Image 1: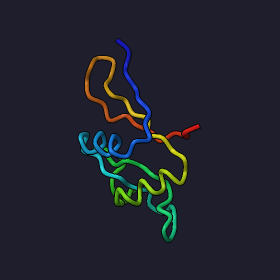
Image 2 (image 1 turned 180 degrees about the vertical axis):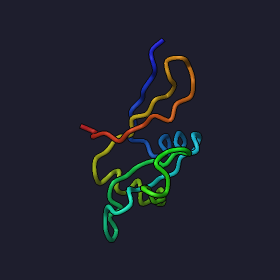
Image 3 (image 1 turned 135 degrees about the vertical axis):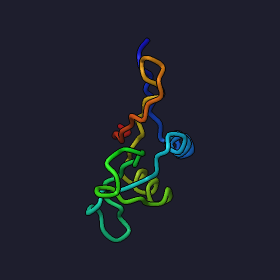
Image 4 (image 1 turned 90 degrees about the horizontal axis):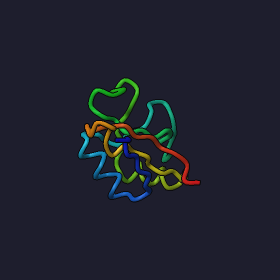
Amino acid sequence: MASETRTTTDHEEIRRWVEEHGGVPAKVRGTGSGDDPGVLRIDFPGGAGEDRLEHISWDDWFRKFDEEGLAFLYQAEQAEGADSTFSKLVSRS
């Protein structure tokens, strides 16, 4: 059985998947300025952590997500059927 990945731009689908997996919207520390949050990430438990990431609001995260023309690619489940927190931001094109 192959692992299943999905790509979406739907804010509610992204928020729901991230929160179901314990993640929070974040940016890379030291990137961006003013109203620009900089490089977006999702911070999952056991991930890069607060040394490198700073949590931001979903509103700020989605504003940047849309401005940059990004899509959210995520692994719905691993090949063995196990849960996965694999995700990445990709271009919508």
